[in-house]
Amino acid sequence: MDRMQKIKILSVVCLVFLGSVIVAQDMIVITGKVTDKKTGEPIPFVNIGVIGTYTGAATNMDGLYDLKIPSKYKEKELEISAVGYSTVKEKVADIAKSKTYNVELNPMAFEVGEVEILGESRLQYTRVKKAVENISKNYLQTPFNYDMYYRGELKSGDNVLRLREAAVRLYDNKGYERGDAYQVFKERGYDFLEVRKNFENETLADGGTYLDELLEMDIVRVRGNVLNVNEIDDYKLTLEGETEYQGDKIWIIAYENPNATLASTGDYYVRTYKGKLYIKQKDYAVVKNTMEVTASNYSPQGRSFYVEEARQNYEPQSISYKVTTTYKQHMDYYYLSYISYERNHDWKSKKTGEKKKESILAELLVTKIDTFSPQVIERRAYYENKPYNEEFWKSYNIIKDRE
Image (cartoon, rainbow, N blue to C red):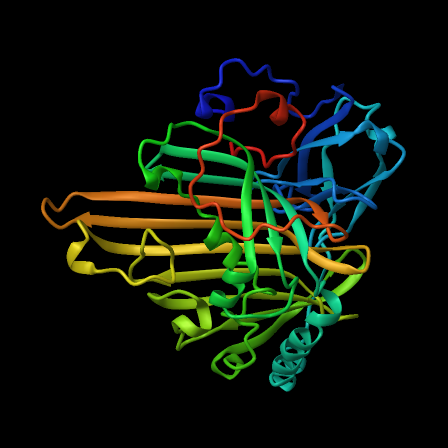
């Protein structure tokens, strides 16, 4: 089922087809696929953006992307980049001449010898601490707005129960000044600009989103994770290797916390917690984080909340989630680029023994940054019930549906 079928908007006329480039409503619309040149496999989470602007998109898990570029940028260059791969640049005007723009990226990995890994085991702690110390230099410390594309999907088995897409504006009063989850919660506000979805709100809960959990995955801003230096000694850190991002060398540092707690992970029911940090060698900027977590339970209010288990109708059998967070440099600082959050639940009815599978897929793509005159938003819009605006979505950059 494609995106338009899911959101039941029959009046939308599809403007693009996979692999084609057309111009519509003064927009250059590019679609295509990004693959690994050696394996032919699709590459997810690739940044595709116009250099010198924050106009961009990201590939989905199938390596597919859509990108709408204002025609005024046709003389600029498009950059296709991903951690671990060579970067490709092409003039927008040249791409617009072709009917297709599928891209192959060369993998860039450098092995680290066993002796070096063993001999530098404590060095990884120094590198992570240095990355935290350099956050004030690498990430903006003053108020700003993010304009973001949000996508949240709830599935039961293979059936999509709810799909909501939204353009969201976030205000951060402190920039990337580090804080715990509650402190950052108070310093950030957001509002919905436009929305489309495949259901109507009938209860207060129907208006809820996964935005707060996604924003907690901005690990540079929120302290409850591997970048909390007060908890770093509880982690096992290993230099897994080196790679490249936009021409710069990157350390890949694998981490695992065998004694994970709410304070060190932000998850009340965490069981296992591991991931990989990608740190740029020249300035210690964190450009990517991947994380895998298993948990014993989950609250509908969020992963950090307690559940009154006696009132649960279903008993949790298996709960896990994966997160990918990427950052990219714009002008003098690094900013959030993309977050993918995929959670899977197996439940068993306490009364009947019936089993069910649920999954949540939530994504954020930053589409614009305002650091000069940010709009102050003092609250969080927990309840969303905006009408659908067809014209807006014709020119807005989104993340493509998975195949």
